[in-house]
Length: 129
Image 1: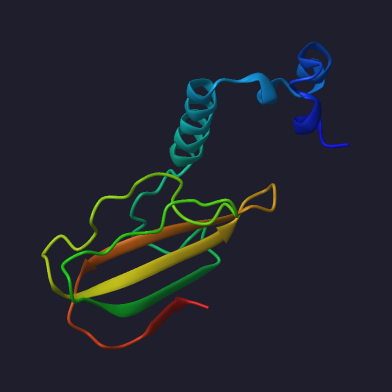
Image 2 (image 1 turned 90 degrees about the vertical axis):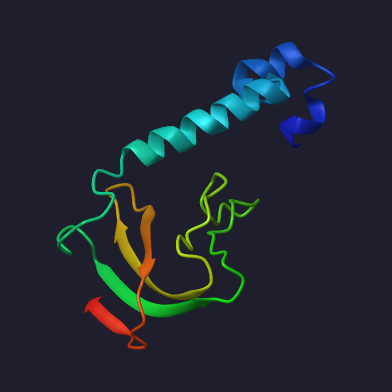
């Protein structure tokens, strides 16, 4: 049986094995924020000058027709940034370059670093296959 189904019937028993089910909305949000902050702090290289430590690095052109570029927020499938992202189209409408770094950590979790900067080149680059 799913512990979530029983948490309201016998919270002291379910809470002993699944304390996260007893958290308030504010406590859950704080725990999520702390997790995202901890994961973000692990990213030691906000803009790596070399490709060392990354398994794949690709760069592609991207056009912002509206003057807005963002990374989707994390949804139920844990896809996205995990937090609201600022507008990455710092110069408004126009052409940009999107560089994505990918690596797998010791726990087998895939990590991504997304860098956006103004650029007019239409070439797709594989900086590290």
